[in-house]
Length: 504
Image 1 (tube, rainbow, N blue to C red):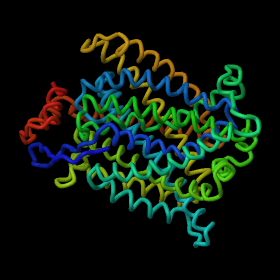
Image 2 (cartoon, helix red, strand yellow; image 1 turned 135 degrees about the vertical axis):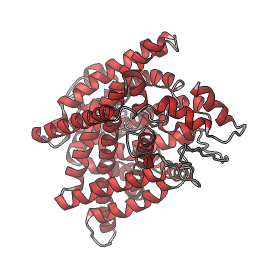
Image 3 (cartoon, rainbow, N blue to C red; image 1 turned 120 degrees about the vertical axis):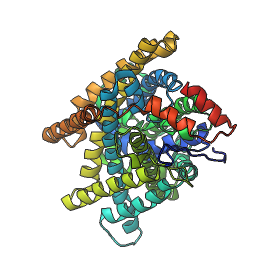
Image 4 (tube, helix red, strand yellow; image 1 turned 30 degrees about the horizontal axis):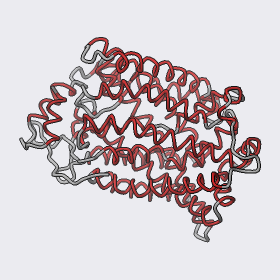
């Protein structure tokens, strides 16, 4: 996963460290990204909804489609990563391809989208912990009490060196993936349910039955955060190789796991039986499957690991968000203090504190408003995030095409034109479906969907306004990055050599 290496910091003229450090390999970064995807949460929560409201027993094929689209996207994404020294992910790519105004607009949209999904998960984990505690004879407490307790733990881990978060996420991820794979194996060994293995996902007619658009929306939500591989560039052991490998590996692991596990879930109940169970008891489908095929203990473990899965997602999103804030602090789009790194931990500690504060605001505001943690906090905030993230990926695809068309720094047609264009077409289709079905994602309210749309557009416009009001903002990807690099202590390390080569 990771190896320990001496960390180094850099400083600008005020002597403040403004560079992150670490020795993350592809495995550690994949752990971060897959943990953010919350695989058990997806299997327990999203898959039953996709089966019930989407295209029924053929739903597992939706993950194959989404994986293929995102792999096309990743080809251009990783090709462009080799030419950008920054660690801002969507923000950095869109800035380089489409300019400062679109770049800062996307940066603020990314902050809103990831903060929203983090708020959604805090609502879900608060309810999940309370349900688990009360089911085992413990006291019943408001969901936000548990959410605040989890916030404190995430804040401590997010403040410290990234290697610590990587180790924690590795352990939690093994547990949640392990229990699902045990269930999958049990279903496969027994030959599925009474009807045998499901074949619905392999028939085009079944795939396009029901509401395939809704199925694709639920499926794409399981990949939120996969592009965060680029966010950890400064903390990667060998960025030029680590980031592309981690990106492709994360997509294949996520897509393969979802497709296999959702297919096993359908096979466990049969095509019609799976739709019936997913419709009648979506939140308990994975627990019932575990109990039926593995035993009562497996059912209890699913409940426990669901909580740890949610916690792992929160920690991953916290790390991603704090690095977005760190990047914006160093670009003058946010106060300069946000761009400071800790002298000892080489972490974006001030950005981490800011992110913790934003999470607290969401939790407290939701509690004061009396929102239900699942049907309102989780559903509404997740709806905001789904639209925002798909829009960002679509903009990034356009930015990749424009960047390579303008600079000609890479003349490989497949990497810079064909694959990115195929990814753009697929993502644009997903975006249209997501926007069209946004009312369904937020409980059927057209008014709330309209409010969310205005909020997303307004946030993007606000970022663009910052670019107008602060002409010096978002120019750190070139001059500022070089200034930081020259301030580095001159050690003959592979990381330093690679960073300089990429910066050139």
